[in-house]
Image (cartoon, rainbow, N blue to C red):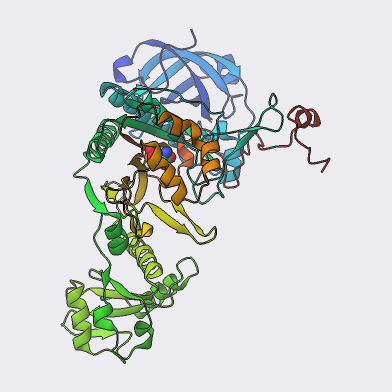
Length: 581
Ligand code: ASP
């Protein structure tokens, strides 16, 4: 038997027991005639003590131990004289009587402790060592728990977990496909699913009215910060449901996960129309842990002689509570912050609502104190608050204010990591004009149902969709929609999107045909599983919640993938090798 106990479970109640443990050497150190060895596994760390006065040979062996050696030791549990309150096993130690080196280890390239000295690249190259660190292990364990609770909850609600294929034909979620050449079908390719969207809709046609799957999705996108080319979704679909049914079902899922995994009671989940999110928060996934809404000020600010405002499509601002005491330096710094290319504002106008009721502003040449007071009243400002105003094109200005709002939220400590606020964003636009391609594309995806009233399409740009996103603390954690289930409407949709009849038939004929055989009304949602785990783990990056992630260039630096294939493979796959080209 390799072990009677793991390295995290021995306590004072075990004193006197003869035990065997196995694990990795965290550290071995000599103190006079004693050698102390900390042994680690995923459950914790236990201290072994070897006593030269009792067994010199054994102590000699213990003195050969290096970091990360794999050992087995047995001995008697005894109370420690020098207790370590920071460790669950810190009240005891093992008076070691045997020691076996199960395997040696080279000196690891970074320290395998809570905090490591290893840089990102090194940690990724030796990911199996990084995964030994308790900090990373906690994330991987949390991920397991979220998956387990998801399966448990949805199964209890009558959902069936059904797998769908990976070698398929393109599913449009707005990204590029990863493709796989077919050896048996010369010149033909599979696409890896960007999501199981079409399959889950087919399952609805088949009558599996509650489906879910914790599933890998593949999207060949230019990797923006913290995206992975392969990532995981909790993918769900239901038949005979209204939007309300879907919202309630999955709000309850989130509630269940947060309660069981983190013991967090998710409060009320607010709902907001997309148009309001953009208007008041400058973003489609508002962080509602704090207020600080955008106020539009055109009426109070235009045609008063300040050309910058007069020429702007939108003048709008934020009221920053209690910030009237910002120094000139702080204001200049904020101004520079909004002027950075990433934000792109032309400038920042500020108004201080001083404690004595007076006003001070960066545009006092153009606006009187009375006018400042009017702005303050419109923005609901009190004495001691600071107003920050940006102007320009409507969309850009809203976005800039949205970014400034989040930055201020960070600076003022309003975005607390241990506070959770979920929000449904509803009524997304159906279509979005693509400037580059000069045609509309579906905001969500082409299978999303237009909201009622679409039949008389005068201005298609204004049609809303039966689409919804679930946000948590300013992150989109899930998105879905009620779907089109009629062939003619689906055809019309493709038409709007500029997809020709033939192309639509070639790409989605299978789905439209299925719609002709009794497709029930249906809708669903998919959660970004990695992101959800990261948020529940209180962290920004999804990478540390994935056992073997890719780096920012989409590489697995441990495997060194992607990598070239050999000539024979090119040949078998009927594709020209790079060399031949
Ligand atoms: N397939 C969608 C996505 O990946 C989710 C859904 O509409 O259910 O975003």
